[in-house]
Image (tube, rainbow, N blue to C red; front, top):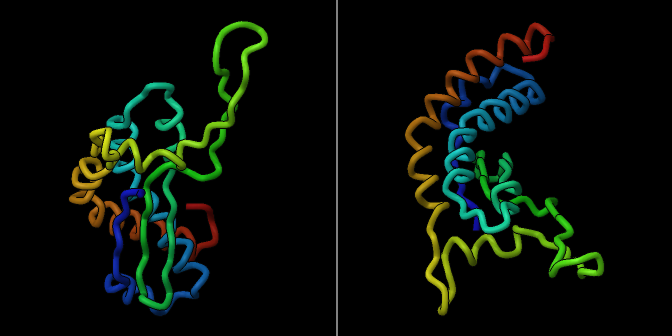
Length: 151
């Protein structure tokens, strides 16, 4: 289970006159920038037994058009995979490890293991600055996109 912030499109009504491609690109850039402090907080709070969980933390920006909702999802990426050596020596076996498969177990725990709850703490720490950062970044990015240059 990844930490996420869902945001209804109300502030985007001011972007109604723009082309949908420019509006979507601006929103993706702004929401990604707004979720960056949350990602940094998750990385710093994540346990580092092997370090793979920390290295796999990514931001996914999703647009749910049916609900007019944008979401920033911070968590372990399913695309991150590493071969890890198990044992010592030259003939040690290797195992493919994908931290997205066990992130929820480390965070929430099981019946035999108390969870670390690092995702919820990171979500709460980054929530306050999220909307301010998104609005600031939108005001920077939109003129650049309209002018046709990279933001």
